[in-house]
Length: 252
Image 1 (cartoon, helix red, strand yellow):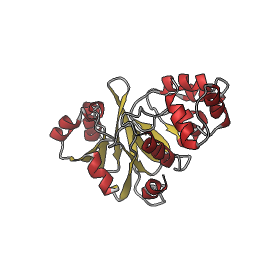
Image 2 (cartoon, one colour):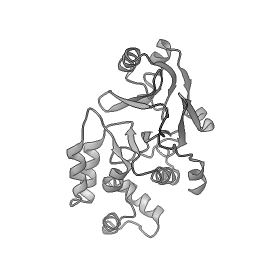
Image 3 (cartoon, one colour):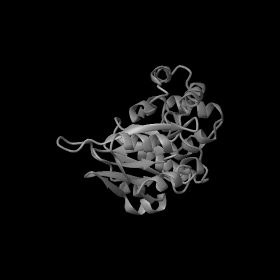
Image 4 (cartoon, helix red, strand yellow):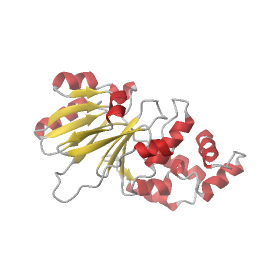
């Protein structure tokens, strides 16, 4: 874990006098999300399946789309690539290329690129200021499926994201909030933070802070006594932190 975490160059918060960088979320295909990270005149698109809304917003705001990026190469995240690239002069960089770069610049600000294998081997997250675009690695209230089969690397990725500041804002690849909260409630029916989280849920703008996740997301709380007790009650191994992670990932 240590080696990968040391490779993370955490994006510092915006300082006084720096250009403002914003993020815009676009919903498509029911529960997928696209994002534009943008400044005064230029933008970067991430998982651009919401093709028409992205192009319309960029045109309306006078933004030049500089780059098109993906959190990973699953088809539901790359479905808009061809159309966006045809309509713009954006440069496309795939996740493997991004992992080697480590960061990109947007109007003088660094977008940090974190390799986060687990959901897939090519999964990456993007971090600028307080914004963290996590794709299918970390959702609001849960984590992605481990389609790579490598639970150890997924564990390492989640541990590294959990080391970010608690005011980091999580922008995920899908809206799974209600299902995530329902599952969390089966593990911790008395956790009032889950109810508060659902009360604050806004389908028009879905996000959470890392502080929220430490309160409601069992996959960031596998060392919490209440979660450990649940795992023990199901006869699952809990002796080490990694055992607790693997056990939790096996719970249905």
